Amino acid sequence: MHNMCIPKKIDYYKKYKMKTYETLLQNNKKWAEQSVANDPNFFSRLSSIQSPEYLWIGCSDSRVPPDSITGTRPGEIFIHRNIANMVVHTDLNMLSVLQYAVEVLKVKHIIVCGHYGCGGVKAAMTKKSLGIINKWLRNIKDVYRLHEDELNALPNEEDRVNKLIELNVQEQVLNLAKTSIVQKAWKENKAPHLHGWVYGLENGLIKPIFEMPAGTHIDSIYEFDNL
Image (cartoon, rainbow, N blue to C red; front, side, top):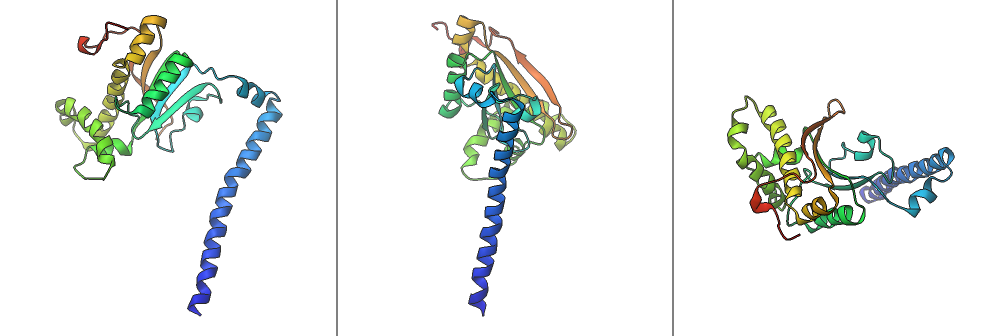
């Protein structure tokens, strides 16, 4: 009797999972049909060219969809996402996206957008070992170390987390400016402009916290003179 019950449980589980999966496909079909109904040339226009003005480097958090919170449409924003919206100089994935966006797409703006309540930043503020992600979070710990006095002067943990989220965004914008990719584009094209934003989960609003117009000087040791 016990063995007879097991297949029923498995069948129910598979049926439930398949139904959830199929919902995504059904939603996609409805979206495609509605897009064509609103604009018959929608997909033919998208498939012919990609010319976004913006590169978005954001957090992988599912609650922060770049197109939804900025009101942009497909084709208007080029997107790269990772845990805690990091710009790491050894991350070939991010650097490949950056080079393509800057040198091929000729984006005019690069936005690093963090968000309050970021789990990656919170985890980096602890002493817990979390496995392979330790190596990624170490970059955020470095930001904490750079601003430790400022952060420790804040009255409570929530304020410290929020401030580190903002400081982390600022440091990632600076990391963009340190790349030869961005510096070469600044010299040749006077673009892109760099922006640091933080999104509020509690109110849906974006807070600009740091800007670097094209050509902004950084510490001279990071500036290349032979581009």
